[in-house]
Image (cartoon, rainbow, N blue to C red):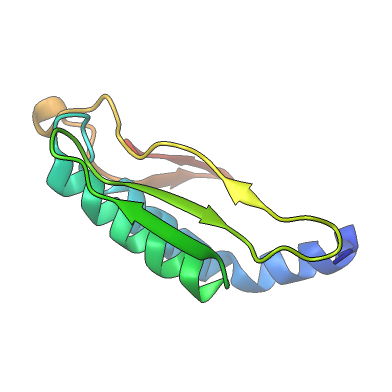
Length: 111
């Protein structure tokens, strides 16, 4: 699927407020490396949103840290999209860095 830059910008502009709300929700979850409960809350949100987007999501539980998820699109004639990343942060619950804020076009938060 080919999408023009103009069409993508129109879509992003229309979704901006919803995107910011989701981003705020994500980054305000404490997902410090040793906080598997917080990391799994982030994975819950990401798994839900990826499924809404039509991605195939597999989740593997880990005992010592948060679960990991593997997501990829359904293959088509141009291939498929696979996402990779991590959800843990270096900010412990007592770090004082726990909220999301905007400063102009820049966002700040721990996650």
